[in-house]
Image (cartoon, rainbow, N blue to C red; front, side):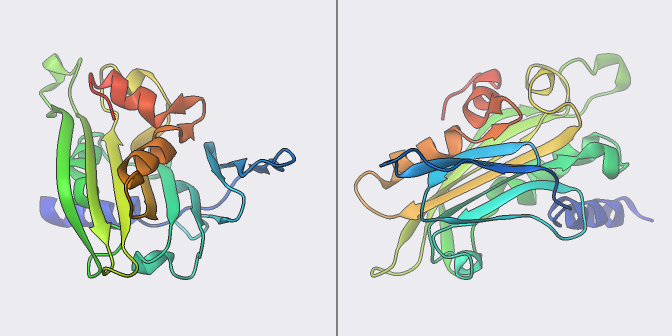
Length: 222
């Protein structure tokens, strides 16, 4: 198979869903507006009125999807969160391909391509794969994108995060089996929407490592 064909096949795998594992949904404290949810080693603090579901189709993704309206989530018209990691032990491709996915379609993935637009994209770390003799910090990529969805009456604001751990500081934290991390937060547009979306995404954790910590390991801040 040609290299482009292999990359395409891997991209399909990377953004397919994965079987669910142990989950935890902690009841909120009396009067609290948020609760802790954990599925497949991904945890998030979410509004109590959001529905939550695992990414439960076949494939190597491990994580969760949550939204104020799960049915409307795929159109970009509802508030919500999606976060997952890709189990590298279940894919069986060279680590360089995770870099290619993260720096290609993963870096600009929006809630819905027909209804949303990207306003800004920041590449925080781009350490291209290198020959085996110089592999100590190669194959790592971290980026953040922001944008809006919908029209004037139902507009939302979103922020997404993608990381290929590779080798180096990002690869030394988080889930050892992970070849890729992805997170997307969507909130209702407004004066504090950008800050709210970033806060929601920043506290997502892969095991005990937050998105904020991964970004800091890349030498940046959300």
